[in-house]
Length: 344
Length: 150
Image: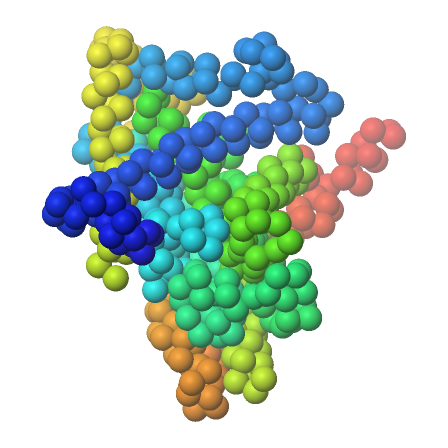
């Protein structure tokens, strides 16, 4: 994006009179606002899509009353949440209780700074791109544990502790799966990783023809992504039939809405990161933006699909899948990918 | 480079501004009425008994320890893997040594049951029976069917 601003300054005479610092600040804030608007719209569409897909998968209609085929359901929901009272329980730790939604929301929103939409349509071409996304996922965990502990409710505490165990465990296979790709690209930046892949599916890292180890890494990364965004079959932290609503049992109104938006934003980040790392990002037969968004929304649809297909796991099964299945597999994949990268 | 990281700062500031902005704005339109029952903890409608900060399963600490070890491993692997192509077999052998040492630790933890959610004893057998469908919470299935046939 920086090159565009420089080009703008050079071509438009008036801008040369303004100090560059002001132009850069304005450009950065503008980019931020655009991305923010995009996320809000996408989150609303996804909440609607989830309910609609859920409905049709269970042979019902889903939301139908608000607007034609219920398309205004998300708008009605957000108005309702805006008008709801914001209650804080007497027993809660007030400061941490109020801070937790901020961490969850920021942890899901800030990764968008590096996510590319196409070759040139990207806010920040950071050289540590994927490492940055992984580290922000860890901040989100802190927010959720904080919410669980500070609510002063037993349901919340259980949900928070389960999530802590689940998210930190799945972070390891996820990071190891990223390493298989980095071994080939030799760079942590999302642009360099995308450039290491070609136009057609067999040139992507998800293809066994490119490397069998990154293909396995793709599966590991997506499963770990499901776990880290608390989606079924790994939605134990929220398990509505046993823990009421898990860590956000005590939240209401807008504070609950931040968790909700944060969850859907985190899903988008995981799917977009999967698309960039393993599915070739903006490479493909169509124009860049169409490829990238098509892959991302397809992965999002698979997430929703899985939610309404699979039953929930038990906590011991969740930990078993992570530590005894995914961890050894991803360790082998890292060594295999490193060997292939060195030899070929 | 500075521009790239200035964007991150802007994103953090915008998310903080959004949260506090909407909270301030909705303060004007949302109701605010304190009731003692409303501010109570939700626990199935019954009055809460005891503190909410109860003890939880010791397993969570083991998981945290395993995580700590492997997370450090991943952090150290990242720089080595990035320069893998330039350094060739030297970097590869370093990765192998590092991963193998930690894999031995994983095998050790596995062998001594530290990765199991329930360690040994009656509870584990019960869990295994339950997952094989032999026994339910109401006693064994066959016994129940025998009772019915009588």
